[in-house]
Image (tube, rainbow, N blue to C red):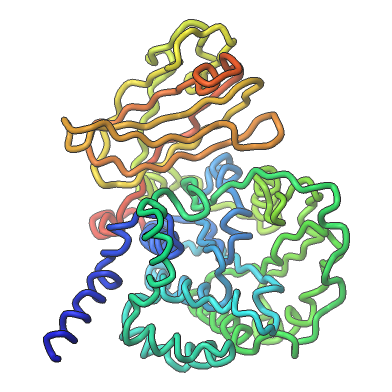
Amino acid sequence: MVCALLCFLTIDEWLYGQGGFLALTGQASQEAQIMSKVARAPVFAANADLIAFGSSYVRSGLSGQPFWDRRLIPFNFGISGGSSLTDYFALKRIAPILAQRRTKPWLVLEIKVEALLQSNDTSWAEYPQYLGIVRSRRERLAEAPVLLRHFRTYGMLSQFISSIVVPSGLYRSHAVQLLRRPSALNGYFYGMEDASGFAPLYGVPRPDQFVTAPYTAPIDMGRFVAPKIDEIRAFLAMARRLECPVALYSSPSPYGPRDATIYDRLFATLQQEFPNVTILRTSDYGLVKSDFDDGGHPKLAGSDKLSEMLIRKLDVRGAPDTYDSRLGSTFEVLALPPTTDWVLEQGVRPASPTAVEFDGSATSLVLAKLPPFLVQPGREYVMEICTDITAGELFVTAAWNRRGTGPLVERSVSTAQEVTSGPSRVVLRVVPRHSRLTVSIVDHSASVGPGPSRGRLEILRFWGDRPPKDLERDDRVVQ
């Protein structure tokens, strides 16, 4: 009996405590999304000018490009399904690093009505999110007063107790999925993220969507889940101890200013205790219905507007004199070879040092190939690409040989993401297992019809996420 128990606990520790489940299944689970964010958080905490917390409406609602354009470093700590409980523990993770900084970043905290309202639905209980970010039994027991109150409110005490005893029970929800299709958790959970942690969306709403706003008047405090409001208070109290400025960010809404006052009573209550917080309402954002996708999240264009709004409203300036140093501490910045050094096929010409144009006359499927990159095996790299494809579809493909001489491994992203035409951006994340990586641009339309592609493609950046251990040997990071 004792041997069986020890075996069971050993398996549980390997699956959950040592990350064995993710090693087997890949990145396409909610836990993997959260753990990836947490792993990247320390280097961003040391260097970022702004850190945003919240749900998928932050993760897919605040893009990185407007920050990079202004030589600012953002970190999008948004987590799908996250809310006040997840935000509190996310800030707790990076608090020791923020405490050391002389120049404090802005902290942006999303306030989302659906996540805070009392309901019989447990969709916003944040149970899997909590297990993704609070990894040790010791911390779960130390934070038991917060967690017990939270999960008791949602009728999930048994699940909470189970998470302390056998946290790997979280994986039972994947059992049928993996039995039916063993590769079901390959790829990424709800899309790849750019260098800042933003996952772009591209859909277009139907004409009959977002006509009637579900909430228009200020919501009474009694309708909110009390533990969640206390978790917001705990977040704000921690931020005050860290001396970080905070903006309470009304979750973006396709209903525009019609729901701009729904948090007024909550904001007034919080400002009595935390008078220095900045309030951002949806009427400040300048968004229209076409800035959202068909699921109600900001699409890429809307996310750019929101990031630009934050920079302007919060007057985010960062520290320009330390930008290059901080960027180098956050990422391994790979030098992009000029397009004159690329191997270009017929019908492809350089348009700038990092962009090429395709006129539709190419006869080869591989339109361009970049000189090989030397990378750190096992490190995660992200390539961001700006596209303006007027016809067809391209694939940007990164490839490496497994163990150097083994089979070729390829990862690709398609340029045909957006329903409408025009300039767009796509993201490719890869974890090469060999030090030599090649990047190619392939004409998918030429191989499957209707013919060669036309348009323009620019590689904006190719950066590697630095591991937290790099902080220990870099004295530049705390600014």
